[in-house]
Image 1 (cartoon, rainbow, N blue to C red):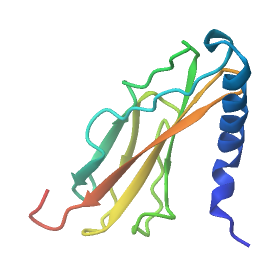
Image 2 (image 1 turned 90 degrees about the vertical axis):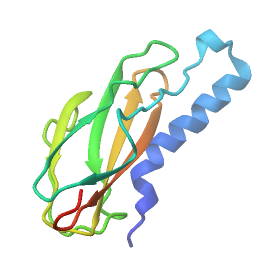
Image 3 (image 1 turned 120 degrees about the vertical axis):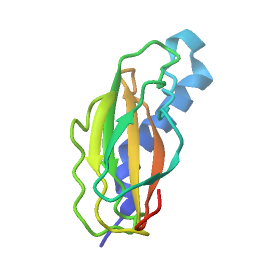
Length: 137
């Protein structure tokens, strides 16, 4: 049986644990979530075959924790059929993919940012890329 929520289960369990800590610990002794921030608009138009560069340059952590980045295609939500690998998928800046030749369809890319606090907390941002048709974009 397919359970799409499982991909987020560790993150939401850690979130609940952190929230429990907030009830009994001082602010400085508890972990707080990072802010996942995509550089640029979250809705974009791209041309088929265009190389798209991704950046999470604005991402921060209120506790100063080190951040880990992961870019991935959210195939459950987009409408493209092509496999779309993301190069340098763990890079803060410089991750990239090539837009498939599927005009009129969308590809959804997720930025996942996790801190190294205890418990580690994760936040997400989604970018929706609409692939332009001939003569558009």
